[in-house]
Structure formats: C-alpha cells, structure tokens
Image (cartoon, rainbow, N blue to C red; front, side, top):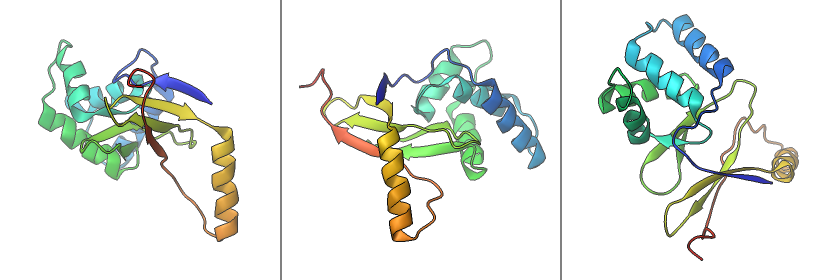
Length: 155
C-alpha cells in the first residue's frame, strides 16, 4: 500500500489526461474557453483530489485570473462528461480529480479530527472488489473507497 499526502495541486503534470479531456470536450461540442482550459490543466497537475476553491486559489495566483463561478461551471461539465471523479470525503465540500480513461485510480483516507486527506492504492483491495463483484454477480463499473480514522499527527 502506498500513501501520499493530499495536496491540492502538485507538479506531476498528466498531459495524456489533459489531451484526452480537451479532445472529449471538443468532440462533445464545447468551445475551448480560457477558464475551462485552465481548470483542465490544473486538474492534470493534481496528484489527488482538490476542492473547487483550492483549484480557484491556484488559478488566481497565475497571470490570468479565473473566478470561482467559472471553476464550478467547468467542473460541472467535466463531471457530466465523466472526465473527473467527484468525491465526498465527509466534510460537506466536493473534491475533484482527473478520471483516467484507462481506469487508473486511487482511494482516500481522511482524518476525522483535522480533515487531512491522503491517497492510497492497494492491489489486495482491488482484488477483493473483483471477487465480491463475481460473488454478487454484479458488474462493477466504478467504485470509491474512503476510509476514515485518525492521522499520525492527531494521534
């Protein structure tokens, strides 16, 4: 299992997802607006989920300002097209991250005390979900796993 600390935007740019998102938007008839383009590019730089406010704050620090309403509109379109995962970690604020077309994903663990969000991947968990799917005779298209507990800093 690998754990990584949640940061709103990292330097790990994913050009493949960004290209996929822009191509999907174009194919679906959306013009390449400046705000939507910047939101896609910000999402491609993330290594984990971010709130609309975190994305807006990151974009506000650049040369071209993007307002929070534009960020929400862009996220709504990206969510509707299946280009982002919308995640509720229990704090009442939606978080978003790139939905990779190949299905690559990670899960999240949330501290109940401070709200710290970390990502993790676990091959055993993925195998258990596959096994459960077969046992239930149910085709699982997607899944979200959010574990809750107390982080090392709060213990």
